[in-house]
Image (cartoon, rainbow, N blue to C red):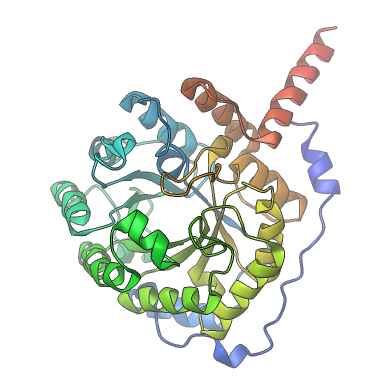
Amino acid sequence: MASLRPMIRSARWRVPTRVLAVPHLQRCFATASDVRNPTGAAQQQQQQRSDNQVRIVEVGPRDGLQNEKKSIPLATKIELVERLAQTGVSFIEAGSFVSPKWVPQMDNSSEILEHILTSKIPSPVPITYSFLAPNAKGVENATTILQNYSGAYLTQAETFAGAKDKPAMELAVFAAATESFSQKNLNCDIATSLERFKDVIQGAKQLGIRARAYISVVLGCPFEGYDVDPHRVAEIATSLLEMGADEISLGDTTGMGTATRTQELLRCMAAAGIRNEDIAMHFHDTYGQALVNTAISLERGVRTFDSAVGGLGGCPYSPGATGNVATENMVYFLESLGMETGIDLDAMADIGQWISMELGRPNDSAVGKAVLGARKASAAAAST
């Protein structure tokens, strides 16, 4: 990888952050994080976020594995989480408290959570572990475990105070941008799902931890097509933020998003007063547009992106959708633009190859395969 790093550095160019034409529309009501850290919130309003720092949320252990047909041993899932923790990634989506009837691959998420809370997983940076809890039963199950190990994780208040000696936790919910997908995925309409999510978000706040909210199919629905209303997405996002969500992840679940529609979506989010720091982008690479849409998002000022090692993933309720954009591809792309992710690309490439072999599937990261190939060629040249 030493031979590739100079190439990345020499290719760098700075992505200008476009200044919004209507800065006075930036949202002035507080998120839950602002309320719990008013000093930090005031500083955020006054100081521009470091323009080249990008946060990667690694979703491989949950979103990446949920659609796999082959049963995955618990030990493999735990090893995946532990190996990812050593790469420099600061957020890992580790499991889901959903009914095993619907997503059997997530059946042992409670054991994964307990392992995280009882084992000091080594990591070069503090890590937040996220678990999906889509309904009252899910949050009840997660809460029971967290309460049993109440001193084993950091609350938001402790994190704001600078504590780093334990992992932080997060609970997440999944909304949908179209009625058809909501019915297929959640068995209810959008309005009902939002009512249900109040309990989950409030449950997270009562535990003193972060709450994340995903909105699926924001750039294309497998049942309703390309014409997803970006204004409706912004309305849903605003509702979730007002409930107390700390962050909204906008999911291109089908991979149907284009540069033009990504830009229009983010314009609508800004017009609704939603700040860039409250937004993450979650792209699938079904049509090869994930990195194009990432560039558009960067230009609009977004600095948080979801990705999955090895390009793992696919949604069981989105026929034809392929995996998430690969973390290896994302890291290489971002660093070539002058961004800093803090992630060890060599280590991530190794993990992508390992988990792909464990699952008996191809490694879907072009960059990961290139890194491994360059390493192999360098070793061969050194031995001659």
